[in-house]
Image (cartoon, rainbow, N blue to C red; front, side, top):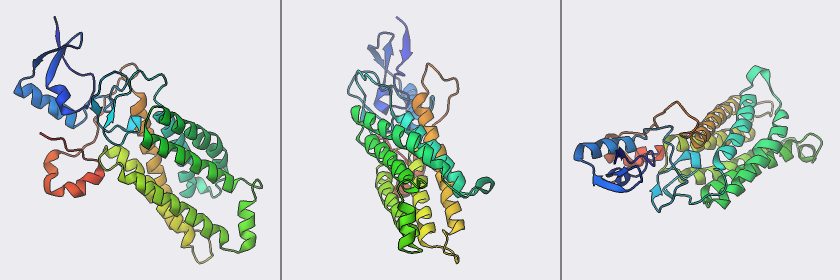
Length: 301
């Protein structure tokens, strides 16, 4: 009988590392103090391929927050799942659409018009992300279903508003007054800022990458909304504020891609191992309320 460490779940709860199993998965003996401390350190700092966890096996163990599954907190393993993990698809759809719009907001290569985003928003950021949200509902992920479906709806509504000559929304508002469209669109973005803040609150106990995604997105919505409401002397959106919003949109896009990679990478397709960025427990204690928004999960010892 060969003995091997129990590594079914990389970065899982500390108690999962207190025993060793044989090749059949049966518990054989308790770990010694040094082995247990080593296992605790590995779990605390998320050693492994992007802290990937196995969510396809049975059992009632609760797994830690994981951006690759779009799970912001402890969640149960998915038993006998008949469909693939939909989170990477939704995250990728969101990331690409946000990436392109963020570059335009930052006036990359002199770009000023966002019409190109309309097609991406309809096809990828809108429809595909909405479908991913519905599939998240099928696997029982309330947070993922709410977030991906809502942002899929955001991109669809964004495309509808800006479709040239299609729905006459911009032209109708322009006819009503010189500031009607900018004020309306700014309030529209502020509404999404409020919604994103609600989701952000739900990521306070997750990982740094997962929290940063929503933090950057929230700042992007806020700054872009302000740029339309607090216009320049010519009555146009405030360019410096709009560029700042575009920067945070780019950051949100890259964090979405990173979390998508974490959900796609597994033992069958990856060579590169990354360490999940967490804060040392030593820095917590009296600074818990400062560190907790950055996704510090403090496990009990």
